[in-house]
Image (tube, rainbow, N blue to C red):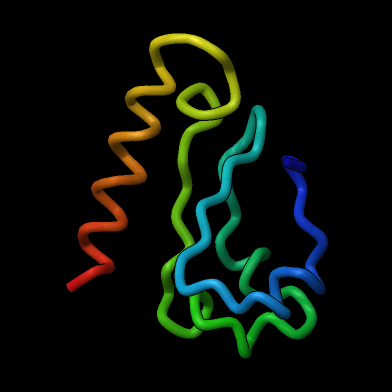
Amino acid sequence: MERVVEPEEVCRRNPEIIFASWCGRAVRVGEIASRPGWKEVAAVQKKRIYEIESSEILQPGFRLVEGYERIKERLKCCDK
């Protein structure tokens, strides 16, 4: 599985939630939401773009559990 997804593929699949993580800097939600064609993506329309710290999902080790728990929390909130 690739770590980077092509913007056209995101539009095609139309996710309800987007989890983002950028190594070494904060995620810029506005920058993600303003990508060409993304205004029609459900996650953008519903303001469901969430940052997961890179140390919690991009590096092997015990912190992966924290990232997993954070993702679970967000999914529960969106499920309502």
